[in-house]
Image (cartoon, rainbow, N blue to C red):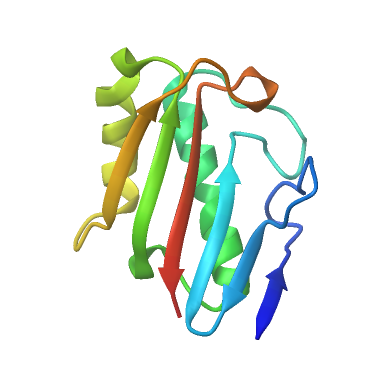
Length: 124
């Protein structure tokens, strides 16, 4: 059965979508940007934005009964592929072992003109 996952510890959806969906033993987390859920401000700089994205993902996964250690696949969208190394450094701090499969894509523009957005699929 499909279950909507929602938490105030991550930014609310800015469109017609859910923060996450739990289906069976899987959790699908919508793309998270660098918005701080407490202040609604966007972090400055690609490193701070990557970190905030992952903190938001962590909060949604925890609400679903999962965690970053259970992420199977992630997709990273970055505005400038020249930021790849910086984003990797932050990402590696959150996924220290048994890293998930991942795709990284450079995009022309992201919501609210952020520099990075990350989505994941995890298990419970």
